[in-house]
Length: 271
Image (cartoon, rainbow, N blue to C red):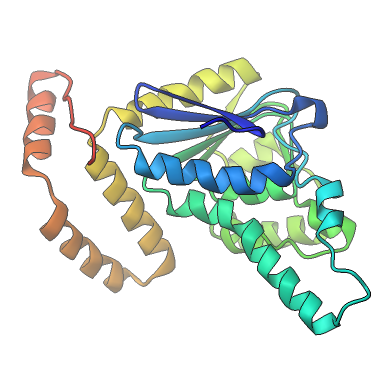
């Protein structure tokens, strides 16, 4: 399937999604919101894919939601306010869906961020499993700077990724969250000197993930997300049931043999 707001490449079990509108700083326009949810449905349904990378072209990762598109979604003042707000609520849920799809994707999703990442871009990368940046990267919770509350996931996911006080400061001030500060706080995992080096590093990590058992990787993501959202006891019960039903003895034998012989295991794709 062809997409208009990004490109999709699948090779060596890695799906690489690249935002492809650098002329508008990769602003997230009308097509993005439908296409991005669709591409993660495609990734979930493709047994060849074991890991996904989200990257972008140009100077900035993304300037966030296209303001022209945002303005076009505002309700008309001539209709019943209650009905207008109910429709707006449904639209916000529609806009949340692509980032929920990242979170629920069966494979890990890695974000490679260069330059500015504004507003909805922070929602996007906060939904990813791991974030990597180039030295010039920065994040801004831009919504507060235009008089609104961020509503697509940043305020729900990012507090689990950085200290509470820092989260509140970023949400209240709309200031730049620079690469080194993001690394020191644990929001990002690696800072590369430039965009090309960043992409090479992220693709190397993606390759390492793709070499593992896809069943074990999918289960690990499921467990980590469950642990994030539940108590320890519930998590222990869940993993006991999961491994009782989905522990693959052929994969364990392959992995153990590879470790003992210093070889490389070749794991089957998911169905």
